[in-house]
Length: 399
Image 1: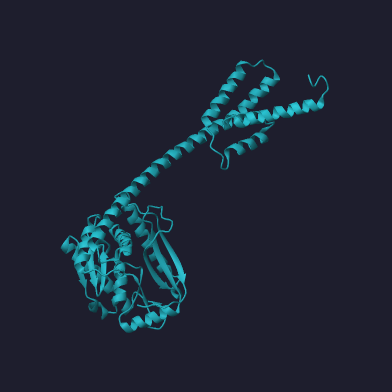
Image 2: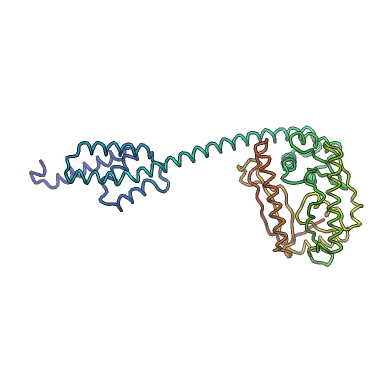
């Protein structure tokens, strides 16, 4: 009526009000219906492609492809059944066909996403189960440790003791040196017995001078390759040549230490106590720091055969930079943002880079990864095992 009467301003206001009403109605529709209306109104293929991208890319909520396809198919059927053969009807049917083809691809994509979500749900449920079992196992270990070492270890050191024992029980490291608590051999052996009940290998307690070690005997193979040794007798850090007289002697010491652990464990068949004689190997160039490095399974070990050599090594290490190699594994099965180091050793920066050292470090990490995978689901669920290197400037070192 307003158009017949020539009231242009009124017509414009009416059109504006109708657009606002249609926009409000469009906004209240399901996103699939909004998409269909916009695609139907698009003038050409590029415009439709742009609309598809707006609705299916980025952080948009996922569309229900099956619902969208059903509505389009029903609309196409209704149009086809009521078509009168006019060019307008043909254009409408052609437009629907152009929309329906990518709609089916959308439905297939949504189906794949749904299947992936189901798989992720299964994986998450498995992870939660592993975490629950892991927490139950570590809780038992903590309870046993608290009971055995009550009054012998400071309360705040017990969690570290539990974490270290768990890493040894699972084979992520061959041993731990209890340098943050002083236990009598009797108490240490009882702790090894209680901890071994939660693992698949009886632990051995080794006494080396005043140091107590908890060892996993199956990680001490007599014929295993010896570590790389670092010498300081020249006043600077140098690699010990494997075929040299000292290299051969140190390799023999490493083999004998590992054989002593293996023999004692085999003879006992249960958690046992092993006393290692430092003086026996010191004469062959392997004093306490070197023997400790061998027992701890370090890829690189300082070669120190006497107090004088220890003082010389301390001077060299204090005057130069070091590179700290660490292995980490979270106790919360991947949920720990800063997983603790389960084992660490240092190498003078002046000796790096070194190809053989890099190969040993990678093998060290791979062995821990395999151990973590083997115990997965068996009451233990370690987080990802990682290896890191950190450079440190000169600082006082005491050996």
